[in-house]
Image (cartoon, rainbow, N blue to C red):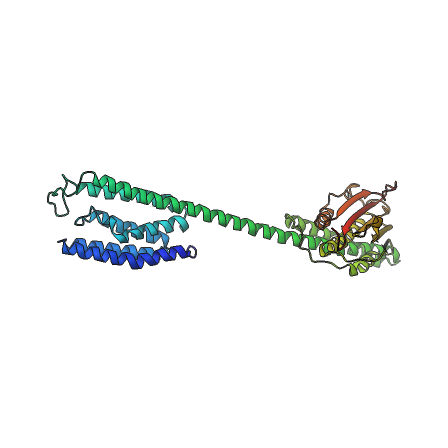
Length: 412
């Protein structure tokens, strides 16, 4: 299975290993044959070199298998003597082993990261041991006494160089893997934030649209039930109201499942033109809801317009949901608020009706609900402010008042 698309640098190194290294290795094999080496050592070295090149070419698709094959080929090269060389591990084609090791550490299974280093160290030890046996006092590949061409310190030097190459490649590959893992973790976090943002947007839309509509259904069914004289009709309307309330409870449970950190913006922008219809839909014989605008309407930024309409919707929804009828609610939009040419004030107030509905906490609308919290975030994101007060702010402690100030187009 392909782990991930290889990067261009990797492709370049594999290309070089498949073009330059084979030519240099072939030249050494010819020199090896001309120096009197047997057929078996030459064939063994040639076969090991071919396996190394195939392993490097397949390392991006099969990193584990390619590394195992390359390690086996290097073991063969470590044991086969070469005239004028301590072993065949110094062939140019041996660089393919380092490429296979790099690829496995960078993009292979995590358990193989340490195994690659262990295999590399073991290979260095095997090479050093085989070289030591062929050093002065040892024997060459034909069993004859060595003629002393090898110095006693040469195997140690070669082992140190090989170990440095193995450790360096492993260390850089491990650092590259750590960098990739950090990048993947960052991408996963960004994806999770986007997912949570989308869930939060769905949650806000469900709350703003569906919950508001269900609340209107409850209010209108109760108003119609009071106005009818038919017991069967009154019972049916009561069932409609109870069903809508049950749907609201189910919706709230679903919203808790969808709860997520909200995005600063991203709502579908409602229009001020729909404000009269929004207010009119909330009115029933038991719910007197009015809209008044003072001053000449001015243009609003998109986020401010969305925040204003959603705030009115939330204020009316809370009044219909938590206050027992008969109820009076007022929506007032002031475009000349305190002679501020760059702001609009909107106020949503209810008179407290016949008191809180049975089972409602008297302080439930003090700003702790998710709907009001979302409305405050919208107002703040649009550059405005929101106040939630008990009563009308002038000594009357009945009902609640939502008051927001939002900037108009041209505000600094």
